[in-house]
Length: 294
Image (cartoon, rainbow, N blue to C red; front, side, top):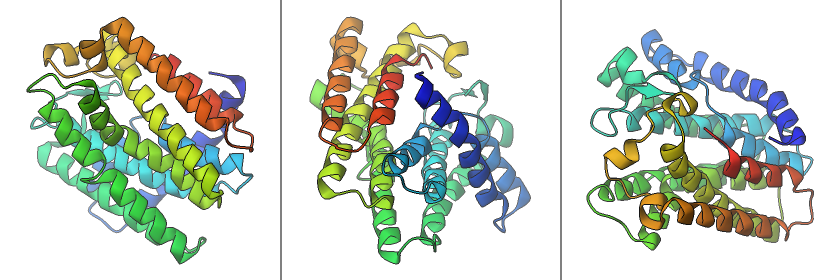
């Protein structure tokens, strides 16, 4: 990780996490439900999505306070998706980020409801952001509902499950991951542009960057499932091969997947070159995503 990105991450993750935990702790809800919600939120993770919101705001010299709130909301959506993804009816995983998954600790019913609660609270958090105009709140809620729902992450999960029954072609596989993984990353980056009042041309360039960086993120995930260990990844390695899942290495070979990873990285950087603001932080994020080992 480059020095500027490392410093930015170290400075902002504590602020993001403090904001996120406080937003859950202060709600009026059954104690064991909040405990289950916080268990998964506090299980660690790279916090890439909220960091992207903050990085775009930083790029435009915008105050980061609002970015922490929006970033918390998108991280809650991401965390809910992981809780549900790990359930026996889905991926049936016992390990997430090196810890027992939520349903292993709290049971399937409470884990399901904790995921539901994280999903719904995220929209309320943005709706109650009185520090930004109502028009921006509505726009952010609309963007998040598209990114997280049937037109985005949930729809992508369905397509991903269909891909376990047959080998998808490259176009189908990209459609899966533009939605399943890419949609929330795209929201994270575009929401930063909304908060910062970025120009329309900058916003379009950022969305294009997000598209390619989202695909690069998933390709690297597929590569790490083969080359990484369970200890490195904090989850069970090698499951894609065992389940005969459609992945980039399965479709293109491992070397072909690495070539496709580099292609999307280059296209992401090309999109950034159209923005006049200082994009060095987003460049470093792109480098980190394609070089990470977990």
